Image (cartoon, rainbow, N blue to C red; front, side, top):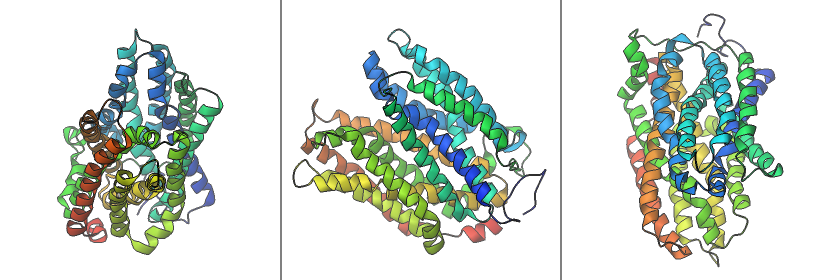
Length: 416
């Protein structure tokens, strides 16, 4: 793999500790920005009297994943390097974040939601871009990626701890904290490895805008199966983010936030173990275990209660590391393996974000809302248990379909 225009590929030289540290800092800051406001936004909106707009606000991320992937597909493909896109998007996004606190009022609530959408259109593509920079920098040593990605989870956790320590959990100033770090990340991005922009074979601007080369990867059967299952498994993921906290509260657990943090700690632990697991087992077993873990988690939620079944609630939360890391982190590595030889890594990572955080989570939000609407106004633990059987059964079916239809042919496909 040649180095183009001074770009770093990471193949021709050993992976240094300095490079690993630089990419770890990238991931830490990337997810710190998101975690600073995402976790307590609902509480903030309810506190200031615009709780009726919470559903709209939390739909902005999935919509932005779809819109941002298309609108930024062209520049991510050809005209700007990934690191320069990171610079521009985080600096402009930081300015928007500084404006948002002044709009979280009953009079400006609708404007706030629309501006949040604008910000998320800028932010969501940076998730895929950060993955692209790390994966291209590591070159063939993609097994180093999970270690670096673990610092993203650590950044999310630290952001929440700092927001709580500052007493800002219910304050619009959560966006100010995120803005400061976003500006810092934009400036830090100037120092990132100068990985080359994608160089797809097609020159048509229209085809570049719509990421046709990346979508063309789905002509490969295994990648098509992966994308389809990734989209479907993102539906129960959205339901977990939206409804885990009220369920845990209904189970009689007072420290809801602390209990859910068990899941993030689990995610962090498994993330550090991913390089070893990836080298030992390969991609399909990890993807399959991750999908099966979703079915097991929801089955545990369906039997968990505030009495003798409380263990099931805690175990279900703790499975988050397996659910997320084994599928989404391994999936990002698999996507890079397929896309890099075709010169469309950034496009493909953006496409993966589109289908998971975009289409899948948007469907999950809507389906979850329909299921939640069937519950009583003050649902009991028994009501919640009944609801969780639906995503448990769905995840089990998806895992079975994946086992029967997916065959890892990434090495052959990458060489094609």
